[in-house]
Length: 564
Image (cartoon, rainbow, N blue to C red; front, side, top):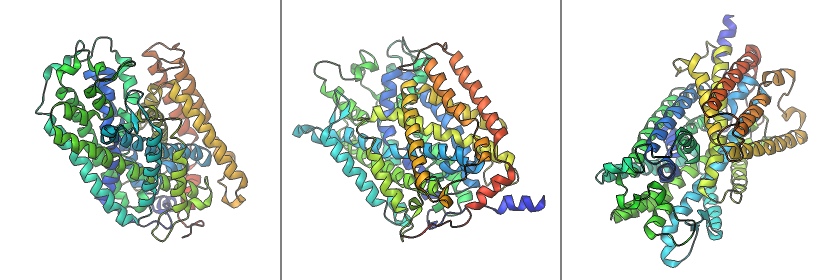
């Protein structure tokens, strides 16, 4: 038993070809630059449009929910600091069948973020073209135009090109961008606090406006981009293979980034409501949207295209408006840049797990997984046409992200049972009840996304299974992951989980395309109970201790990674 304990403590997966050049600040800013992205530019606007001043409640709920998930990732990242960590923790805990699924969820989530950040740049960037009657974004339809698509492709190519820099240099570039990204929203909060209109918090009949119920508040969490805005804390985990002293720096980076992001977002929503000119709210916050027919007032059109910059302009703060229009390029640029990085590392991690072709783990002399990086660019383009706006893509990204996050509490619970004595630089308090709660939270957010998002996500999952299956069919036998009886048994809960969430969403209250057969409140009780059943079923069927240790040990050496 002593020998087994020692093995569990010392056997750790190790990535090959990557360089540990990122310190605590770099890791913190990797997460922070992903949290403070286009979400701060649009989240407050869409939330206020949906539920008025009650949007503040949404930011509090969203912050608390995502904070629980962040604490889970803090323990996992410190325990196993590997590249593409969210794609690999379920592989260690449950084997290849579950690992393939959650690995693809992670890759799908990461690959869709760069396009959405590009859309944010187009939407705010329209301001600079208005005088020339050249349109990259249509404020009335809310969609990116043809020229906007071309600029988006160019921007994504720039993300890819910068990512070929060595990690040490890339970290300096990202840190400079992130300092700006944190400073500008902070300055915006301070300035707008001087334009306080207390009456705005009761517009429409009260803090919770007339006609707004709890169903609307829960719907706004994913639909308005609130949960999306908080996403990104896990980026330090994705880059764990390149973080110095990762076991200590990763948990600190994740927690610090989440605290900073939560405070900024809640205060941004407060000042967006308080600073709005009362004359624009005669019809409530719904008056901040362009009418379906007829011309859109210029001041409203400016707010639609750039909520905070348009608000600053309406208040006569021309200098602040110009800075915000500039930030509308820099802020999404930094987030898109970081997600392009993390997508390539997730692809690298999936190749290490033998789910993706081995070429995905080829690295160049700078330690950059270049094949994976190029594929991240090409596949990212696929999501441009079906979702031609920031708002249309945000729900899918949120659903994919939270589905990815759902694997983390399952893995944490499994590791606590499989290797309780393993070194954990950060040990999440109350994991016995907090881990299942985190799983419930993740599934609630998926459910609140609505059946339309859930079925589209299901289509993406099926396509992913087909692509991975094709890769495995043509791969050499030694390059395929083990899919033996034990791996299938450890994932027996997975198809029930995925299909069950689809059925609950279809019969629930959040749509469109749902049937509404489950009454409100009872539907969420069903989600919670279903989540607990799946959670404890997964814990019961996890890999045995010895098998789990062997899976980890298999990745402690270089199974074919090369520099190309």
